[in-house]
Amino acid sequence: MAGIGFELKKIYKEESVGRNLLGAMYSTLVTVGPTVIVIAAILTMYLLLEYSDVGYYHRELLSSTILYVFIFAVIITAPFNAVFSRYLADKIYCEESKDILPSFFAGITILGIIGTAIALPVMLRLYFVGGVDVYYIFASYLLWIEELLLFFSMTYLYATKDYRVIAISFISGMGLALGLSALLHYYIGMETTRSILYGLTAGIFLAACVNGAYICYFFREHSKNYRECLSYIKKFFPVFLANLLYFGGLYVHNFIFWTVEGRIIVAETYISMQPYDMATCLALFTNISTIIMFTVMAETKFHIKFSGYTSAVNGSTLKKIKKEKESMFYLLMKQISHIFGIQIIITILFYLLIKIFSSSMGFGGMTLEIYPALAVAYLVIFLMYGNMVYLFYFNDNRGALLTGLIFIVCGGIGAWISKDFTVDAYGVGILVGSVIGWTFTFFRIRYMEKHFEEHIFCNQKIVEVRQVKKKSEDIIYKKGQGQIS
Image 1 (cartoon, rainbow, N blue to C red):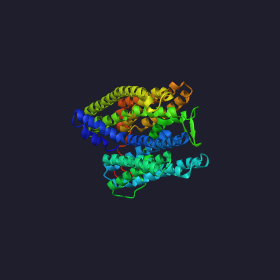
Image 2 (image 1 turned 180 degrees about the vertical axis):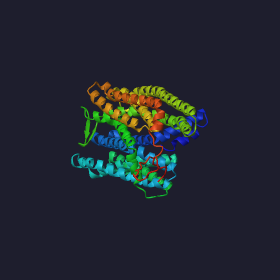
Image 3 (image 1 turned 60 degrees about the vertical axis):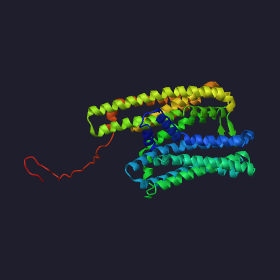
Image 4 (image 1 turned 135 degrees about the horizontal axis):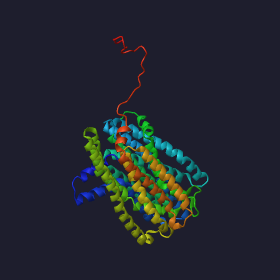
């Protein structure tokens, strides 16, 4: 999130309760604000258009469409965002902004091609096997491509540091979604789920257009250098793969539970396990504050310490370098424990609120049995991701890649085993996988602390060494002749 740290540093420059509240509100808006706005709009459409009165098939078809679009858009865009944010940071640092806009066009083209390739077999199955009409399928395809482009464009919007545009684009987009869905349903007489789908598609389209237009306006220079950014995928492939594995691991347990008895198959295409998926959603939002706290701490205090260490490396004594390193790692461990302690309290409070108000919120039973283990699992998962970002800070891409691999493999195996447990233990598998992944990141950071000088000074090229071939006649000095030739 290039640029967020600068704004947070300005807010937290003065220590006060008001500044702390402002910083919390700001980081919440930037990190999870867009997601909250979209979810709030969807729930409002459900309420206004009396979604609960819709037939079971149509209701499940819409919810499955939205579920699949969101999950796979996150998984696919995450690795590209990680790599392209590196490219953006380098170009901004080198003051070569003319290369930024071409990279944006290259990125959305790649995602458009990948997204279409993934969607094509799904659309064909929906039409020929599921019997879904072509208008619904085409709207679902548009929503899918729009989500990919929207998620990707967020990286570039963060680089502009104009976060008002993010709020304006999502608020205006979801406003259009609400208005259009109501218009289609109440004035044209369109069926509820189609009204919601068409309205949501139009709203996301508007948000994506506003974001894209502002990116083109902000980065006006255009070098037409489309290929350079693609080399970063190869250069930072461990970063690309680490993010792909991590975000795949976020949902691998859901994919496995889509195979158990009690799963739902809609239009012979979409598969889901409703109680487990709902419990996952609740667990995710229970612990989303972990990401907010991490953003604040990593982009303010830790970044200052890290900058202090790099400054000492570039021009200070060995004693000063060691002192800055010890101070940096002390703060890092302090932040990890601090976030863990606060989030435990938040998780317990959320759990109690969900238990109390579950019936009025429209869920209970099996979902509430699954929820506790998943709530703890997602607490550990988000803490693990925070540790991964610290590894990226230290340029330990291999450690981050191993973390993603361990997480998805152990989480997948754990979920496969726990699907045969009792309902209340369904989430134990991914919990064990997340604990193993977090443990690896913790000891990897401790290892980095002990070998940090070796990692910084011995793994980087200071001077490019070229091998020079000498000819036999290029004699500089011959013993006994006392001459130079």
